[in-house]
Length: 295
View 1 (cartoon, rainbow, N blue to C red):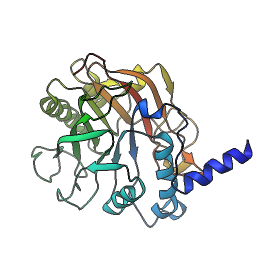
View 2: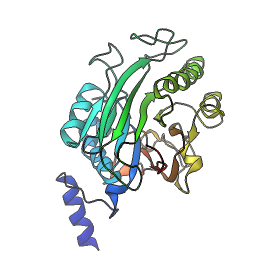
View 3: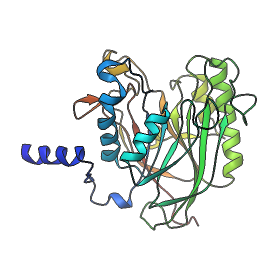
């Protein structure tokens, strides 16, 4: 067993991934990951020390789409170089081009085509780089409308849906609540009758007003509350590189859905991968199944 484990780790570090699921190509697994800014001042937790483990963890989960938060251009470049099967959509929040953090969407280009995409700012002027309400930072939503180009058990060929990634403000309470309202209304307008998958760091616990706004009857459903198989891995998604004691921290990262989707599984990933923290947040992922009658 030790030899097998060592062999697996060698393959993973070399960029070769063998899925733990024999039918991985049939699974519609989506992921959200706050990758933490590429600070040089984080010592052993700086980007250069953790980036290999971070991409290794993404390979292990083997999502077909995932959203990232806090990704700077250098991190976007690294993800593209090391996850060659993925294309992405998104812009930097500071200028709408390549400056500042991305809340990008990565998608497996072997399985999907992107039909339309865009980014809007969570503010009173959503079409231009801007601060909203009492927010400390510019905040954005990146969205895309995708179509499957393969037939699988989870989604038939030609299935269309909207997938979005976002990061709500960490200081402004008004900004978080207004962002929840804006995300709900604007994504509904863009999706029409299509299912919606919304992932991100919402900086909001499950007992917050923001969470209630996101999950009220006309908005979204939380996949962690719907899944048949749930693994919350310590019941938190923010852990501050282990500086928080067991029981401290909270769930602030979510995968929400809207539409007639079922959720077989939801998981919070371990804080460490191959012995190293991958971020100050845990990645999360959910398995989804689209209704077979959908066209």
